[in-house]
Image 1 (cartoon, rainbow over the protein chains, first blue to last red):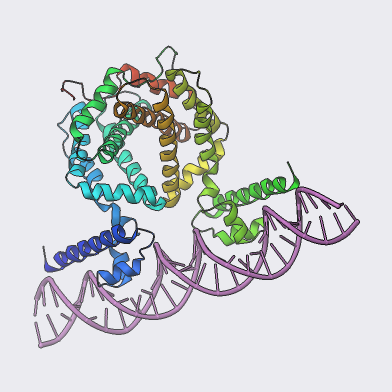
Image 2 (cartoon, rainbow over the protein chains, first blue to last red):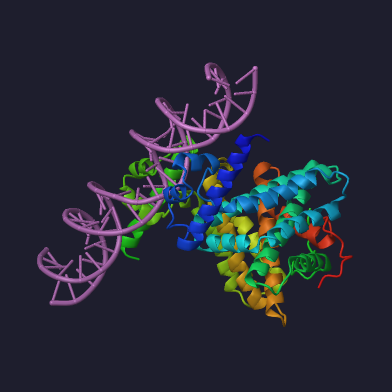
Length: 204
Length: 204
DNA sequence: CCAGATTTTGGTAGTGAATACCATATGGCA
DNA sequence: TGCCATATGGTATTCACTACCAAAATCTGG
């Protein structure tokens, strides 16, 4: 790696850190991009070259956790499906758990700022899509439409577990661990603890 | 109802229709708010008084479907849980199915425009939250944290079914009906067709 | 029908995010 | 050291969105 990429990573992190600082101090909406650029001692153009939108300054960390787990899953073709899915879920949760302050800040910002919440959900949607594509490749089945259906449902449920667990974990600081929560969620799903309608209907 | 509210509803719908027209013709990004205001023969101020953001011009219909179903559920306390949840899901799907072109346009716009996708997901998040709150009131249980957990998971799964079914329905025009799809999804979830990890772990 | 209270409207000015473009700086490399 | 690629900073511009105010339209009581 040359000196150029090194400096790139350095200024990138510098900008992100300064932005994080200003956001937590004065709020997301009260902080302008020019202020962030000034604090990081770069021009606004440079800032926009690294971060296409203001929201990415906050959410890049979450994005790395989610899409990184899918990328890892994609490179492990030998793992069979239930275990692989569980690994993806736990992998995401572990990485999030290792930066509690960052996750909490993201939650706070998303709660008080619509655009951050919107971007966060868009990222979640991307995670679901990529996970669905990978599941389609692994799921057995004859009818491609049926496989796609099952894959999309599974990816959605995985994301659902992650969201619910992280939320509960953030709202109860210190008292809960993510891994037991995730397994409790899977147990609920498997054991029928979810009040889904019984299959007394003749679905096609 | 006085003439005032009548005219309000009229201009509101006029603006939304003109916007829908311009969006489908020239795309979301290529259409400015001023153009919409000019097409509807109102000032930009008036447009912003009715629709706080550009995205709400597209997504108000979906919002009504989702939040309307939750509101209906809230006013039916005598319905027990599995049936109620199924009714909420089918209610949303029926309303969406009754306006296929609108749904398709929303999907197209969301696929090609990040901000629309973001707003759509934010709306879905609101639906999940409100449904979770209502489920908490109805679910039996001693530990409030456990009830909240189950409720959040259930609401997420309901939304997941809706999203997956609508998506499949939109992508296969004409060939699929939403209600059988929804029941197939519930059947998959109930019958263990989802490759969730088996509960061989001792969850707390 | 009319005068006053209230609401709706259109216009103006301004903020700030985001883009396009260009001249300049700086690091990598022969 | 000198050439090339790239990163940078600045400027100008578009456009979403807000705050504010004066005028027009609507409702209400006489």
